[in-house]
Length: 326
Image (cartoon, rainbow, N blue to C red; front, side, top):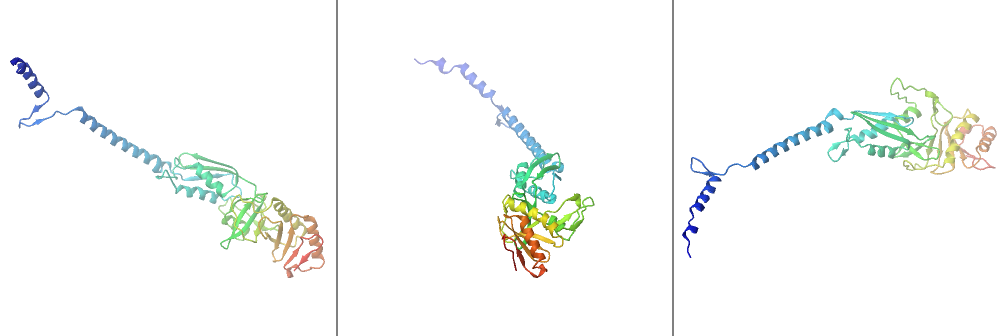
């Protein structure tokens, strides 16, 4: 049955109009706009906070990683004896130019990698101890303890003599910088400052003696095969090294009038040892045999048949019963 009241209820029409006007406001021009809500304010505030955060982040990154406040400007080397201070500093300074995490230079104390520096130094030198510390805000401190070097190995690379430190086992400890070579083994004298003076005099043991702190410069051994060597590689047997050290001392005592220019070996890991004199003639020794017996044979030959050794090329003492010369 049709109900008039249910279909045209005045209360229902009143509520519908009230809800319409409650959610809308009318402008004088007759236009209708929606009222602003809190979401727009929150979005605006979030953008402001983000911009402030990014500005602070950029400033912090610049202050700690790019500004001069934490730039590395000093490298301190402690414990150095034979290794060049310049060479060690150069290894570290080269690392300064490399980036870390793609965007940060390692000349910053926070970005400098001690592990990479330790690896680079150990690739160039064999050390008993290596400690790298950061001293904020501008300093890197490197403390080393070198392995004991006994002789210097010389070989040619690209027609240039290269000098290497060897230990008692004939293992290459590291390359000797050219400045050290010129300072010690040539007539050219290089003095870094007034505190580092040395007087060089000729030495009959195959090198040059230095009166600085009473030290004796290590004997030179030339590799006649000019084989390429690598750090930590063994190039000569330990017994041959010991033989050369003993030979350098006993030869100078037994033949004070014969000046030794250097020692030589015909190849790597050989037992043959040569003495090259300043006048150009050589003496061949066998490091696996008795040194005193070979020196005695040399003395007999020089006092007997060979009065003027400058007229010969070599004297070969490697055979027990016979001495050969040419």
